[in-house]
Image 1 (spheres, chains in turn blue, orange):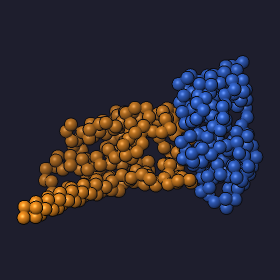
Image 2 (cartoon, one colour; image 1 turned 90 degrees about the horizontal axis):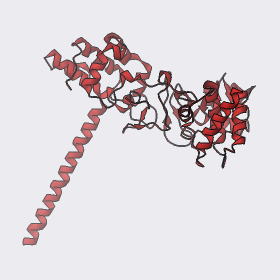
Image 3 (cartoon, chains in turn green, purple; image 1 turned 135 degrees about the horizontal axis):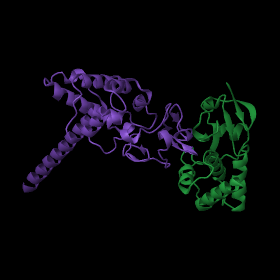
Image 4 (cartoon, chains in turn brown, cyan; image 1 turned 180 degrees about the horizontal axis):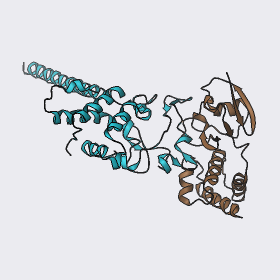
Length: 153
Length: 212
């Protein structure tokens, strides 16, 4: 059965089993490999995308739940908060191995959209589910503050 | 001869030990099985004193109220709990507005309207519409049954009349999730139907709380 949804601004459909995880569909059906498989049990955050504007772990989201919804991945994220986050990430050279970083960027962008001037506590709460085995947490927090400052103009 | 007597004596002692062990194991299994069931109001009919019957039925309701499936989302702190040992939720998540998590990481980042089986290993991630923490005023973690009972009857903290509480216990979907928690989790004892009947019978007998 074809599941229809909006993916990065385009109407798409995927003819897959309804319980297929969204992550599988993104990577194997649409070849959007920026979203990573980390743990498969919603414990690491590497597979984070936006579903209807909110963060969502795609490894535990059946594609049937996406029907009629809007999915944004690291390849399609846009807007001033996303640009500010990406600029700050580059300026502070945040990634080390980079595997978790698409998930980190998706969570950080979602945070800035809701709280333009986040405190350290806001950042820690929003990013707590995105694990980085290179421990780039300090640079991530610094980059989110930098992105926030840049949005203030 | 002495050796034979000692050997027989040892065999008897070993047998006795085994019997005691088996007996203990049977008793433990029986206790575990009892904990998995929920007695219905009729099972308390032999308690003539109405107040004592009311307390006995609330104690039975306590099997549900203090079950880890229920206490997990009735914590006294700002984080949900997990597992039969009620350890802190992983990944770390905070209560946030309405008990639904923080901006950027809400409960709905992982929990959807249904339990979802993992694709790569055994187990599942729990889910139900309206997945959230109970307000702090309804915290049950670490409280005695008597304290939980008095809290439930205090409308300032429970935000429900006894009639509403009965309906909540008997029909609320999020409460009902406890009996259908998904692969990898032990469900709450009995059924939601019996829990609702017990709640009604407890109310009908004066809604008396246990001491302590």
